[in-house]
Length: 170
Image 1: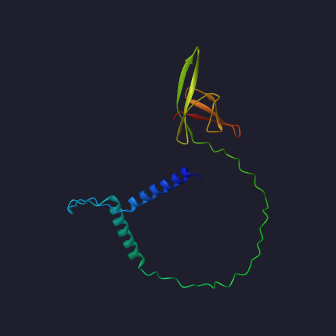
Image 2: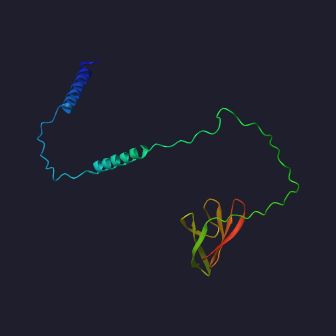
Image 3: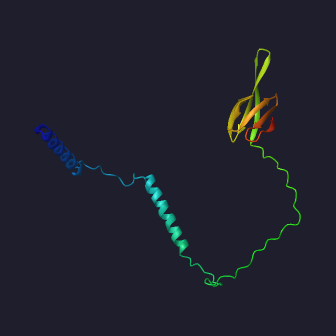
C-alpha cells in the first residue's frame, strides 16, 4: 500500500468518525415555548385516539361470555360406510340446444365519412366499459371482428367460434 493511499484511507476514516460524532451530539439550539391553548391535535394523534377508542369498544364486546353448546356427538366414533349405488338412467334425454352467450357489446352510434362517392362508416362501441371506434374488418377485444356497419346496426363476428351477432342502436 502506498503512503498516498494509506493517507486517503485514514483521512476518510477520520471524516466519517467526525460526521458520526456530530450526528450523535445533542443540539443546544433553544426550543421555543409552546402555548398549550394553541396546540391542535395532529392527524396521527387523532387517528391514534380513534384506534384506542375502537380497541376499548372491542374489549368490552369480547368480555361477554359466550355460551357453548354441549357436544352431542362422539368425535372418536365414525359412521358406518354406506355403499354408493348409482341408478342407471332408463332413457337418455336429448341434449338441450346451446344458446350462445352474447358479450356485453353495445352500439352507441355510427360515424360516417364520405370518401369519393362511397360512405365509410365507423361503429362506436363499448365493451367492458371501454369506448371503441371500430371500422369494418377491424378486430377488437382480442376476439371480435366487425364484419359490417350499417346506418343503425353493426354486425360482429366472434373469431373464436365464427359466430356472428348483431348489435343495434338503442
